Length: 164
Image (cartoon, rainbow, N blue to C red; front, side):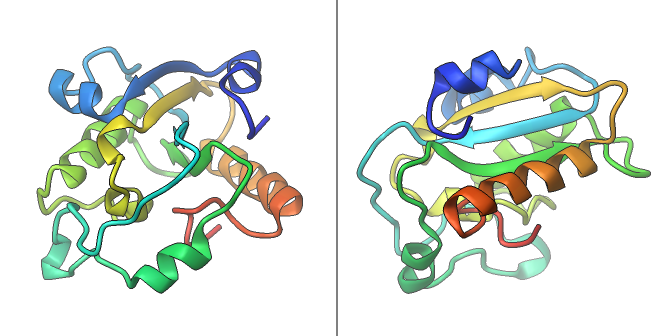
């Protein structure tokens, strides 16, 4: 499922909108319910930025060393981050979480530290975001299982999933 848009669509994911368009629209078309989202990179060759464009939440610089970015990179997949909204006791929705994520990517100091490595890719504005609503299931558990399945297949977590 992690290799193509077609496979991800077949698994029930919707959206497939660029981070640039999500930021411009302020995520207006994103569902206001809990769920799972993927960040996808459809460009084969990646180029890293020396400085992250992400916000400095609690005055912490989100930039990481190029060597860390390179060691986290996973070949032969388009999925670079798996996230969730509304798991456990959280009232977050896909809309609120992705809106926060886009604000972080615009340099605002908001609390979306997870997945911050995407904002150190040169093509960060062209990455695709897709989502799947999970009204009857706990998104945290689904996210954990997806990261487990990914790790089993690629021997490491998705590029921007530093935990999981």
